[in-house]
Image (cartoon, rainbow, N blue to C red; front, side):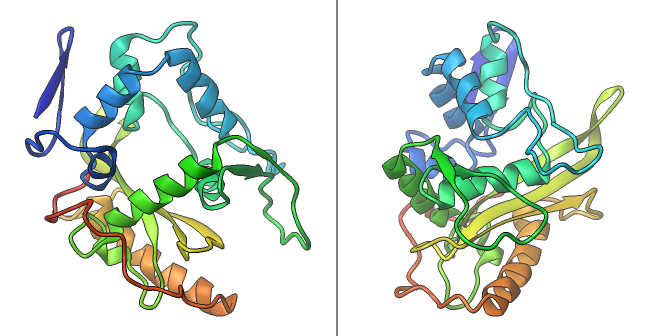
Amino acid sequence: GYLRIGSKSIRDMSNYGVIDLGKIIAKSSNVGASKLALSMDDQYLSSFFRKVGLGQATGVGFPGESVGMLPARQKWRRIEVATLSYGYGLSVTALQLAQAYAILGSGGIKRQVSLLKVDGDVPGERVMDETVARQVVQMMEGVVDVHGTAKKARVPGYRVAGKTGTVHKVSAGGYQDHRYLAMFAGVAPVEDPAIALVVVIDDPKGDMYYGGQVAAPVFSRVMAGLLRVKNIPPDKTVETYVGLAKAATPDS
């Protein structure tokens, strides 16, 4: 399917018909994400993006840390709202993304990130409704389901939730054809998330460049090692959340 905004068209890989929010996530529907964002107040969206740490330093104190880029206009154009919903028109660092996924994993609590190990509890602030955060994590489990776009991110014995991403690289002249950043970000174990992990593959070579193809397998291996090293027990149930994706589809 496609969505037309002015002279611009937003397209999906396939015509998915009428789909719910879970399938929008599982199938990486740009059209679905755009329609959802356009139904919301753009000032609320801008405020929420900043609440979860986008467009600003994480506070780790690392010299030269990038803050990414989030449009700071008083009023976003409709096409900007639409493309921001699926990751175009802004830039984020891997650390910012990991912090955002940690917020989901912690039930909506934002905590200060650190490059050093921190002993004891880290205080935080609520930036998202707990029920909403838990529901999003459950829906992202459909991405890692055997029929999802990132089944290669699965970790034996654990339930994993996450999201793929594949974007064109940016140069001074704009987006580059045939050069990509492939990403997978997620949390585990789903029942009580303990780890948020982001894997970014810069400029993957060959015909395989989607996040579900090249970043998800790396995520699986690294997450499996982390869970083992930290002695985190497997989920009580390992059945993944099904029903969100009925057939494997390319991610975007």
